[in-house]
Length: 258
Image (cartoon, rainbow, N blue to C red; front, top):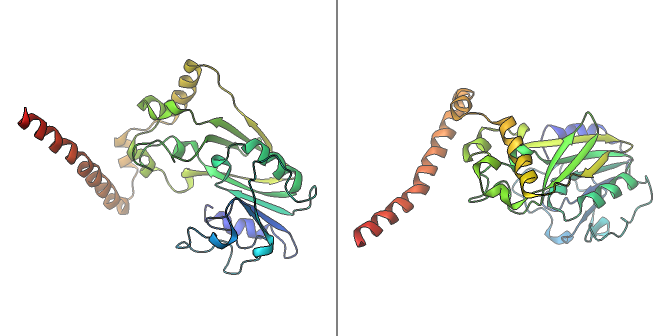
């Protein structure tokens, strides 16, 4: 979860409120009374090197850790509007059926918080080698807080193919932590939908249009950096240069052998 939003979530939760964390296995929201995830309780906290979210005390325990496939179309084990606060952070983009999960969040929850990667981040190279965005993410997600809406669009494979469809490797490092994510604080309910795009040309247009509308030159990106960021820039450029060296050496050996 984006760190500045943790205290805001806590400020919206009363002491007697029931809190559900959906998909919180890697770094559970410790104030949650219930956690629902496909992974078992004993393996929680994959990112244990990070500071705990929402305090040191775990309000959930083995009996309130619900291990299950949250996309199996079986209603969540809670009555309508029985959960005071639902948190779903960096989970929806992973799921095979986020629309179903959103419907259940709306059904069981009175209010809550949703967070996903921004499309700026998900359409950037430089996060994982050789791919755009995160390799295990299935969806490009757009959150519009003004419309209280979450829109899912399939992360089509062609996004990796052409520079027209994604941002270059340095763009990810240019993004601030805040611009790498997007979130929604919702009350009562929120709207959700899948944006379906038909045909190769339409998909290409959709991906390319987003990149064009947010493109920035390397020179402008460098100009916007603060002084303390320059060390990071030189390190990134150095790593990029070193990653290209084996290819150059390989080409030299081929020429010599010829």
